[in-house]
Image (cartoon, rainbow, N blue to C red; front, side):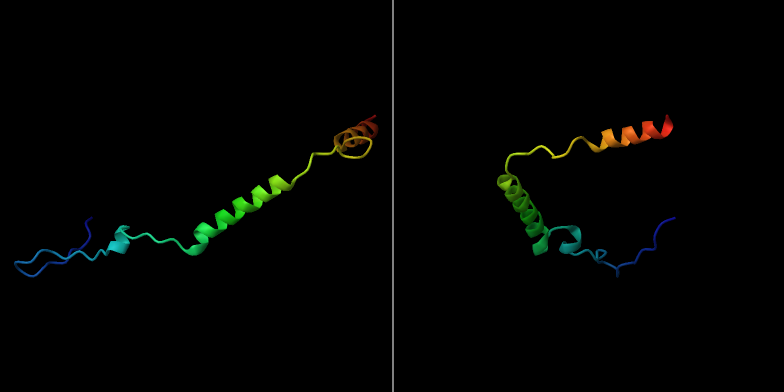
Amino acid sequence: MSAPTQLAPTGQAPRHRSSPRAAGAEARLPWWALALPALGFGLLLILLAGSGPAHAASGDGSVLVHVTERLLSAVG
């Protein structure tokens, strides 16, 4: 099924209602479309640059060891 068409007056070419903006000739971004990724990148870079050496977790074991011990004691 075809869409209805408008007929142009005799001797004239049909008019198209597309504007340059609709056709993508002028693409403008809002200010935040560039500012937010730049801000996020900067914050991640600061976090990476400011981090010190990693330290081992304090405690006598990992959580997985404690959970496994509890499961084994409950079963047996």
